[in-house]
Image 1 (cartoon, each protein chain N blue to C red):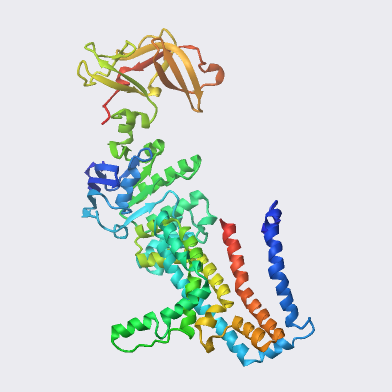
Image 2 (image 1 turned 30 degrees about the vertical axis):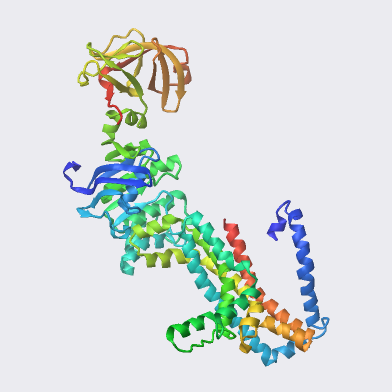
Length: 364
Length: 275
């Protein structure tokens, strides 16, 4: 549905060097109007560099940055009309919550009456009505970040950028605020660019995710694309858990593994005979079955082995299974009470569907 | 008090504390004793409070101290602002330059200033040469000379507390203000200045405390109009030989210093407590 929307941000061959270090390779990226785009990647992947160049914190070494059709490559930050939420909130410690939120309006010369109305409204929207006169020090981390968000939405910037905004909060609050930010995005419809290294946060919140590593984009797509159709090993391992197998594609349509066994691939895998490749299987797509059950369909695969490790992590239990040929395979099962759970050393029969295997591209 | 109360600090503090008691507290008690002629008379105080010379010196002291502190804060703030914007390495090197004036005694510096500011000094000679006419700006042996000498001494003392509070400002605040559309002047007025105010106050108070007791600079670089309380103490001690009155002036100077020193100490304690 967002495909027809025009681009809010266009990066054209943008790169950044710090001395000899190439923080961002020449990159093209379009952010559509109204979408929630997440820049996801490990630290040093270039995601913050990208964000900081859009905000104007530092200049691009090459390329062009277009904002809503205007070239802003060399515009100072204050002229870009962008909003930003910081990881450590960056609230003015000497100002109250009200004054903090009023700051961008004062800068814009908004009248006192309008400031009062807009600030009150913005604080109410983030659930902080009644906290107007508190200084940042008198607010909890979550409340401070809500002030940071209110300070951003109050002047209706063309895009709102958030740089790991929940990074300093504890897990439960983080999840709660993820939903609040999602709701906020739905309500105000502004373009959001969100930076995080937390894959679950990215999957939960984004319309699209831009996965980055070593200063370049690895994959750009919907959360579904990234989870179910990762393009390479890095993407497969960074998002979710994965079983990886590598081998050579044989004439019989199977992937010959180093162990000597053959692994059936999806029907339309598109690999030439004799080519080496790597495939991925998500642990939750592997099922444990009672020995002797008949295969469900033609593409159903099975293997047997012994349980090598069990990790009970709440709703799910992860098993590591050593197959008879020595291959280790991980699977995830819905947790059962201890007496019904698999134990280390148990014999186990596994099934999966060949269509669930994802062929990965060689990393650049 | 709180420092002494903290456990195990006693043995470390004791030597300095005992020394301070002997070399500072005992003479102070002696002066208090002396000013009241053994605690029996307030004559010395009543006589100087009626003396024109004392009242003028008192006024000069307060005026000179406030003006010198103000000038030092302005100059020191600019230096601190520049230092705060340098890389840590460059800042360390530049801080040595800030401290350079302390490598020379204030007595030597005061004489050196006569070479620069005097009638035939470097400034007047240069201006005469540049303008092609005899220029004799009165730069020394007056209030201007006192200000130059005192500001030269006090400015480095202001730089450090101001620099500390400037460096304590989270750089993200500047980025946030800029992204929200604020111009540099507004950022300075709404972020930098209010957040460095504690450092400015601490610097101003310590400059004021230091300048109240100045003796050499007004004596060597000032004129007859620029006699300060410390010079008056000297006058009564060495020329009038009235130690009773000299002590009374000393006690009043002591009280004046306390007015500035106590808030400065409280402020410093509060800042350290906050860290």
